[in-house]
Length: 365
Image (tube, rainbow, N blue to C red; front, side, top):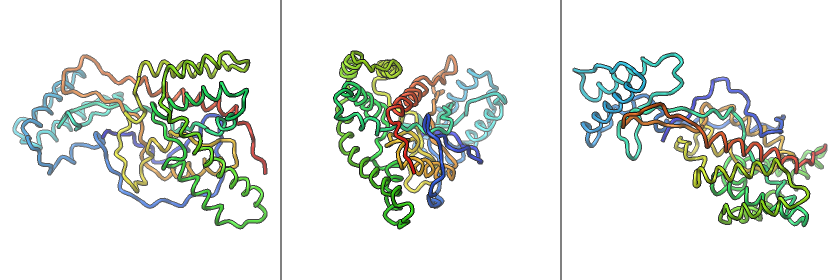
């Protein structure tokens, strides 16, 4: 598993999806403290002490080959650790090469292991997600279902949601996770409350929860139908023939076409590298800030966003996309380019903004 960036001690508030505002709400209870598990590349060499390698000579050789390749690329002085035995020579060489990094060096030098590397140097770069929630609202789609004049748009969005769910791997809101858990918590709060002055508003919240569960059970099977680029194209063609054809939505669909062709099976989780640990209260995992959710305009949204923000404020780490360059072979140049991630995040943001325009019902009272 690979590293994720460490969030500043004084975290900024997590930004809600595009166009949505945070608000006050009943706070969640403080989570119990857990032990954060350092993942692949998320440590100095110290954890290797005491680990018995099946072939330590091979591991040692692999490390020093990668060390030479790293020094050649970045014109660093190769550490002289002659006279030291394994693993002290590895520890000292690693410290010496890290110490040579110039102040402007924006990469992390790590010792990594995976299925093909035993003890190899690598550089990593983390994509900054800017503490933003990448949530896609589902209620706008539900409002279109069964409306004859909206059928072409509905079918197009089903295909778009299918890409996001099946290919990009974005979890649905009724699956186990932060969103589903928070909706359940709101339901529990409502079941416990007997505040008569707020009863009309609470009743609207209860009805919203019933609706989102009903909609989830119906819509999820539709977006689970096998995603097809040909089907997406056919839906787009039908939508283009309608009077209400939205050029901005078409741009989003065209970008999905490009993403699918450039990265046919790429999912967002592929560059996320923390190993999930049940009960971990220190890490914001990617599924917690990238997800489908019900709505940003309903009677639940204010409470939901505050719950998410309060929970994330207590965490110290965030799982973000990481790009890794291994040095088991000579490298001609630094290679840490993020292409898929910013394009996908842009699609999510633009799609959410457009869907919010179809979900303009403002809750009152």
